Image (tube, rainbow, N blue to C red; front, side, top):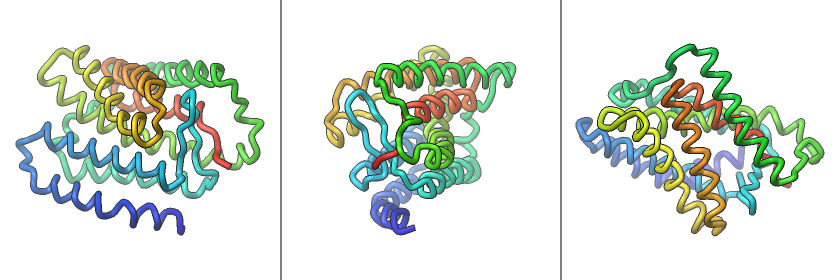
Length: 239
């Protein structure tokens, strides 16, 4: 609980300002409201690095805190934020395309694309996650975080942003815009917080475009499976 309290209190002043900015922005300015939410999410995510909740190493090696309770709570809170967004901002919620076409097929394809990204990078890294101490105890909390936190990220990037762009350009251009925006929003993390540079930007561009194309064809739920599965497969506990 001490870790979560520290994270919340550290983050509170910045989130309060973003919340006030969002509240003062007219609903008619849809694009600006979406950008405010994206910026607030980037703050929430990137603050986790200096607080030791996750780390990003060379070759995009993702390490998350070994505290499975903290992981599960953060994932659960992300789902609650999605619910709050849908209820308090119906205009933005209307932009979210949760599912398109056959749902079962879409979810299977989303899962398969996530496995393709995650397994490929895992093989490149050469990390045997199951051999790491405490991996199986840590894994349940990581599952909640991988799909819960990335559900929030997908709702913002592939739900709100991509849905908004589709009202103004072709679905393919909207998907490309969403994917590039996703990578660009990792720029601060790649170039300042971690100073890992191009490898992070390249990975997030590939991942962002894959999720955006899955969303274009099958909806946000399938894209969430893609994103969450990819992260789950490359994540390891921090020690």
